[in-house]
Amino acid sequence: MTWLDWPIFRHPVLVHMPVAVALLLPWALMASQRPGRGIKPWWVTCRYLGWMGFLFSLAAAASGVVAAWSQGLLAPGAWLGLDHPVLRIHQAAALASLPLGVFTLRLMFRRREEHLGLGFLPLFTGLLWCAALLTAGWYGARLHRNPVAPPIAQEAPVAPVPAPAAPATPGLAAPDLAWVLDPTALEPLDAEPRRSGPHGNRWVRVWATPEAAAAYRAGAPLPEGGRVVMSTLEDRWGRPGFELGPSYGLERQNGELRFTLHWSRVPEAKRAEVGGADRAVWTGDAPGLAACRTCHAGGFAPARDRSAWGIPKPKPKLTGTPAG
Image (cartoon, rainbow, N blue to C red; front, side, top):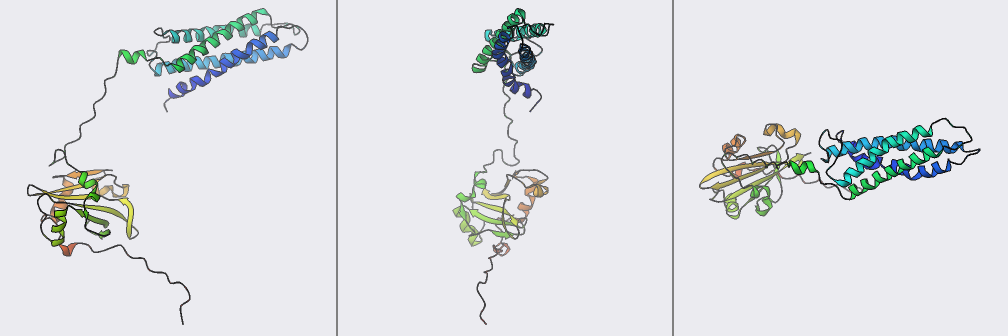
């Protein structure tokens, strides 16, 4: 929240006190007109209400100007809005209430005999002051129900900023990553995750298109158009954890093997593996895929090099008393 937000949000709250004073002060002023003993407490009541109304009127007026500046209803440095009748009357009544409040307070504090009332002048100016406060509150409520369209924004509309173009990926102008992001649409080649040392000791699972799955099982080269995805999970205490690791993609297009790595959210402890980035998308000739191109230059890894390290089975707990 900036320093402008506080007066903007507090302006509708601050105006409640002057309106409340405008509703209560006339009754106290009329009660203070009676001469005689016991009239002085009504003096104190009128003066207290007067001070509260005036101080909160100052705060409401200041916050209203700042709010109008921030919302574009007033030009920077301007004090009056003359383009809208409701806003103009609201401001005029609020400004008129300030000198009326000062004059009423001055009359309330003039020297009087303790058995006399406050007099007609405080009553007259006080009623005018309350009328100005109620007028400002009434037109302020109309502004709140029907906000004024900011004239400044209409005169000088801000052109929308075009979205930045996606950076070009080396090797592929517009890589198709849907098959890497959703490998469950492919055929699973592993019944459960297995731990792979060459892939950062992560738990991996391989998925493939039908033609690639047959070649994978037979140890044959990846056929044209075939795709293979390896999804990974980070290790947690010797078992698959809940943090997603990178997804690796391998496909053959036009006789050429193409590699893809997608890691949508890199844990902070693992960011050194991708040069400190919090997200990694590598395709084509990206330098980060050099190790993939070296290990899989011929396509699939040989069957003898594939990890068979499955999830350790829990040891059964012995129950009861052993015989003996």
